[in-house]
Length: 426
Image (cartoon, rainbow, N blue to C red; front, side, top):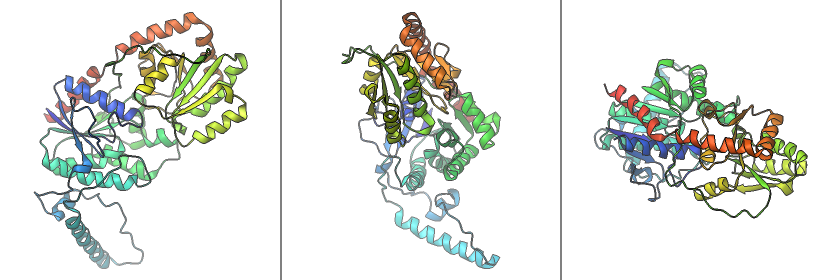
């Protein structure tokens, strides 16, 4: 079985949990006898080619030799996102205008065919442009490769997945790692929402990382429940060993690791830290990550007068993440809305007790972690204090948590995904 998979990031080049999850799933699929062709916008050549064949979209000519540009447009009609709505125009003139625009678009395609697009693979200001161009290249790749199923991860790749489906007539699976409601609350980006909804509607199966996310997909996007399946994420133990690190401070260390954005709840972590420090001073708090709330978080820490006990590391990845966990005594994930949340699993596999928000998908699979509402900073502070001050509690959480996450393997998750593929190939 061969799968054409579209993703936006892949280790070692990651910006968060999406790349980590993609790698874990691809590796699990390889162990289950599934060959994966993994397409990413910008590959550097140091990705793990043992688990998948990596295609760098920046190296692919946006050319389709098997059909004309007009035929391509007929089958992939969403590539140009725009509106032909014009006031005070009669139906005949409107039809003529649409026909002219269609011819212009076809001519542009002739010019752009056999052009390589240089993708940044980042999340910058021209993201929507890159998403649309990635769809063009995705359609081209679908006509060049032999595969059985298409799998697209998160909204950034949904257009590419749809293009590949329309051109190849192969089934499409979209994998929802997060929704716009998780990232933005109720103040959603309607353009992103529309792309998410389009991908879910066009997909033959929608895979969600938790039941929490599945409910959002069904209730907020109106997707048929019969085609939405939950496959929980897992954790990769390969290469995991207890690091021997030297701690330069005698105090206990409590860590937040993730994007410093609304979704991840960094401000609740700061408020809980202030409450803990009112009860004991021999604690240091670390906020590892970056994001749009970074500067505001620094200002809040300063205003609370806890700057001497609070540290900002910036974005960490790879070995630095493992080192941070090895230096930690408690890990806290206070997410406002977390579709799953792989970082608590990574902390627990290092033997670090975890406190997680009840508003997370990972709370569905963990029993040996302390769960609190993200907004309840008093409960969060009490949980931190208890794990630090009562060694028996901390030791039990560490020991049982390690045993628990050891059972959450990507091979098992991949086996469930493989069964989804097989059901669509019948």
